[in-house]
Amino acid sequence: MYFLKNRKKWSNEIEGHSAVLWYIEEGEIPTLAEAEEKLDLLKRKGSSPIAFSMSEVYDIWGQKREE
Image (cartoon, rainbow, N blue to C red; front, side, top):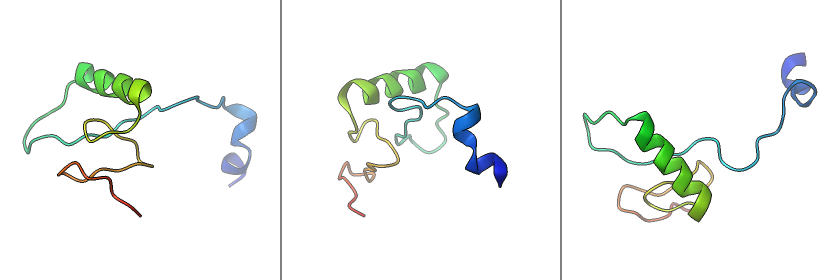
């Protein structure tokens, strides 16, 4: 518990997005290059049905989920 409460003492805050989500076809295995492209797209243009963050999720049909 101490570790989590004091994380600011030992870690640097990351600016912007560090993870990205997107839908893939069943059985498809995304490449690292594809993930880097999606993360770059998210950082440049923000969340979209093509690349989104956990705070702005889109459904499989491209509609933004309101929660």
